[in-house]
Image (cartoon, rainbow, N blue to C red):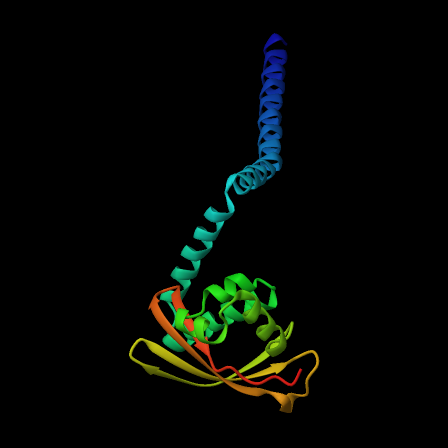
Length: 180
């Protein structure tokens, strides 16, 4: 009888131990993701805007290295257009070739006025053709206003992009007249 009680006690201890281990594993599973999430949020908060921008540029560069030429040029123009649509005019202005800026948009204010008239909050871009001449690419596009214009009202525009290296480019474009 003592042996039976001893075996029962050993079984109880074994069940309690297994139960405790399962509960600890369950708690670990439940609380680990939250802890990792908090750590990543803390790390994000600690990163400066400049560090975030560098990380974004590195990710863009890796992506661009896998792209064909045409896709890269369309990506660069898309990046320019995105800055305009997000009203980040200074960043968009920074993509422009210096001689082009001096000739057509000597100030950020001149550039801002022009792009506000030419590009809408949501521009419709139709890529028609691309040609390469050395390290310079010319994109033929048609620009339309998705929100306010009719499909037939797209204006032709040429985009000239000089790629110095992946994610390092300058650009210019044909300045079109605006009726707005």
